[in-house]
Length: 325
Ligand code: UT7
Image (cartoon, rainbow, N blue to C red; front, top):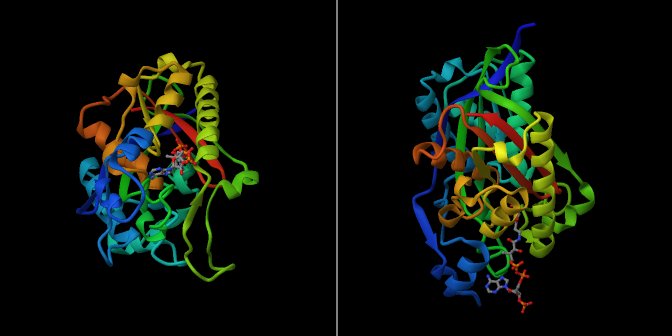
């Protein structure tokens, strides 16, 4: 029977102009460049300019993805956008992107799964495409985390950055052969019991403020290694694959030590892992599509490669996707 499969046909990115090196934090916090570099791997991050919004960055990334794919904006019939730092409480940032790109057909909606947001968006878009609901979907991750950081909290404010990444995901006919390109398997999971490990202390129905990010970093770290390894193993297992079959890992970029511990636990060589956390920091839902862009533009991934991508975020929410690039 004819099936559909989703393939990535284009990748785009946007990073704000302002680069913030670790030494800037030394001016107002009890921290050092050395501590941040050795404990996180982060050296610099980008912060959005005053007035620069999540949708502004998403539109720029989407335009680049459309160009990379050779797709006209009017041939897009869906936008699935992951963010935890939207322009407004409503309408969705996805609709602002739709308007900004001059698209008036199809659908646009936001997904909120914090740092796992892009994985959730990808899984949702894939489900819509393989169900025949759409032919081409822009899947976007965009964040302005600098707006929710408590700049007096050295345990969190040094970790995050702003940016956006986008892909064009397209449904193509498939024979169901795993050697074809496209999304092959996925797992998304959450456990609300762990909500207080990583959260924002404000919101519409509680404080009527945006609030600030709060995190028990040590606990999140522990869950991250365990849950990312589990989701990755399960998704690969569905395909009869093992971590040794993975050509390239494109992980969420939260902390170099989490990336290293997870790949070590999976038994995958560091050489096969795409890393951007050193220059982007943790850009939450934007980190994976930004890393997709880096992997593609730096020649780290080539057509036919088995790619494992995975993320964990507040909720806790987590997941993994296996695809053939
Ligand atoms: O995207 C998903 C969400 N986020 C994450 O995945 C982040 C997960 N967690 C982490 O990346 C790490 O836990 C952190 C980078 C946040 C912290 O690293 P750690 O090795 O777990 O440090 P720690 O929290 O155990 O703190 C060790 C020490 C503490 O001092 P004491 O209590 O030992 O005296 C902290 O107060 O380091 C101190 N510390 C700092 N020192 C200098 C915490 N932040 C800083 C800082 N500069 N910026």
